Structure formats: C-alpha cells, structure tokens
Amino acid sequence: MWDFLQQCVDIGIYFSLLGIGLAPLEQRFAAHNQPFFRKEWVTDFFFFLGGNLLWTKATLVVLSFIHEFVYYNIPKYISEFARSFPLVVQIFVVIFLSDLFIYWAHRLSHKYDILWRFHKIHHTAEHLDWLAAFREHPLDNIYTRVIVNIPALVLGFPLEAIGSFVIFRGVWGNFIHSNTDFGLGPLKYILGTPRLHHWHHDLDKNSSCNFANLMPMMDVLFGTFYDPGKMPEKYGIDDPIPRNYFSQIFFPLLPNSLQQSLRESNAASFLHGLLRTRSDPQSAETSNANS
Image (cartoon, rainbow, N blue to C red):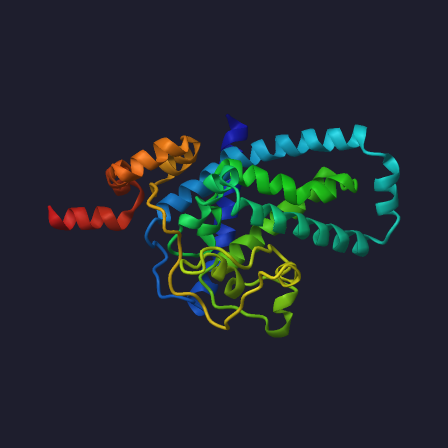
C-alpha cells in the first residue's frame, strides 16, 4: 500500500513539474488560443494516470526480459566494442540508431492496420498541448518504447541509463506536442520542435510527414520532412471512434467488422455522448446551462 501511495506522490510531482515547465511556455508562445482545461483534457489526464500507474511498469517488465535475452544471447564482443568508444560517441550512436528504429516503427504503424488500430488513438486528439502527448494506447506505448530502446539494449547500456533515456524522450515528446509555436531555424534538421511535429497531427496532411522523434534528419533522409513555416489549423483524424478514455482503450481491440458496425449504427457516437459528461468539463457546463 505504501509503495502505491509513494508512486502516486511521485506521479503528482512529475505532473506538476511538467505543468510548471511547459504550461507557461504555452501561454507565452501559444500556437493556438485554447484554454488550459480544453476539450477532452480529462481524457488525456486519464491517459497520463493510466500510463504512469500501469503501463510504464508493463513496459519495464518487457524491457527487462529483452535485457536478459540480450545478455545471454548476444555475443559479448558487440557490447564490449561499443563501450570501447568515448561515452559521448556511445550516446550519439544510441540516439541515432534509436531514432532510426523509431522512425520506421512509427511509419509502419501508419501503414499496417495491426499497428494503426492502436496508434491512431494518439491521433484522435483535436487539440495539442503537453498533456495530449500522453494519449497513447498502452499496446502502442509498449511497442514504441521497446523498439526505441533496442539499440541501447543490444549495445549493453545498463537499465538505469535506459530508464533515463526513456524519461528524456518522454519529456521531449511532451514538448513537441505542446501548444507552442517553436522553430529552431537551421537547427530544425537536427532537433525536433512543436512546429514540425504538429504537422504530423494535421487533419489534412493525414499523418504523412514528420515521423521522426528527436532527429528530423530521419525525415529528410527518407523524404517525409515537411515544414511550411507555420502551424496547422486543424488536428485529428477523419474516423468517428469513441473519444473517452475507456472506450479508446477497448475500441482498438474489437474486430474490424464490429468496429465498422458500431460506426454505421452510430453506437460509437452514442457511447461517446453517454460518457462524455464524465470526461469533458465543457459538456458538463453545457448540460447544466440547458437544465
């Protein structure tokens, strides 16, 4: 019980630090005029809680199994050779390989239904900010975190270092989703920014560009880099799936035929409306005003 309470405290501190660090930036350099408690804020907050209370532990368990498999099955000379280089070189190689891996893992998750059915939950967000970055289906989250850490595992990085790497990428992910209009000039090819990543969520572009996580040079190399020098106007996907937390967790698990039946019968919209008052403060206000 004490461990769970301590975890809740740690999560509260983590949430507060992210808010303290990024919310003022969103006010000062806002890309779009939207309130802090914008539409579907509670949905994303549930994703934040679920991700940190449950799914992060599942990811660490999977990474531990892979770490053990690598330790006993990958020739030791590979990790020994990697560690023979200066630490700065090791870090650069891991970041480069990790971004290469996650670029293609991300791009494939937009191509194949078995991956897209889970990843598209992330793209249902119609308003981006630092909290929207947490809107990930747990299976999509585990998939991406495992793929992105394979290079570090194979090269023999300790789990503690990999954990720090996961945290850094997570915080950077919050930044590039934030409601800020940030560009880095000529450095935009080296380090990802909100101005680039927001176009990956653009409704009209249909997620066809800017797949890279940290290093946009991956998009340059593979022909998916896009930077019109401004921010997109509309976000999301053209797919009427449920928008509250619990529906978004279970909907991707349904067979395609059943998903389509729900769309055609508007049952998904009904479920969304039924639960929306619990996950959307604006809906609750409207309901109270009409009553």
